[in-house]
Image (cartoon, rainbow, N blue to C red; front, side, top):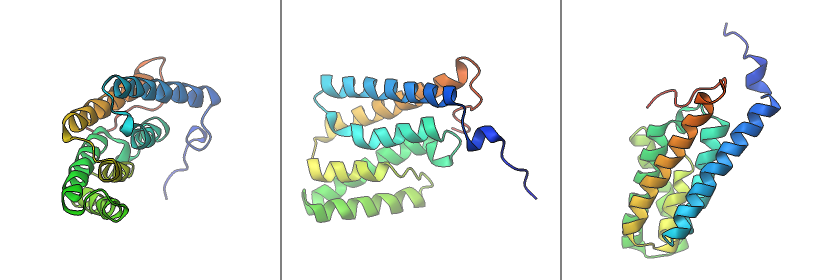
Length: 163
């Protein structure tokens, strides 16, 4: 019989929740700044969801760096491929999201916010360069900021659990 979860897993201490909130906001402000400087603000919605996973559920497999970075990049590539076939349509966006989900499952890179990246690519039709390098930079920044809470002040949750 599995042991019960510690109370801290069910009800996080308010200071831990505040700390994770501050780190998530910091990561997203950095990403917003980079996107603004490069005239690419499109990534904030799916990366906000990614930040919520990294900081709110750092122990989940879908929150780990391999899934975050790999799932986002794979979904973007699928979005660009779908865009090339369907054009920038709502139908194409729906197909891209479904294909991204399937590809992430097959490659064992599930990261649910990444499906939104495929949708954004189809609907907004950004140029692959600088979009893909910016996405790589942004996911790398999310992982880097995700490392900080567990290394500053003895936070009880370590991130990542696996690479």
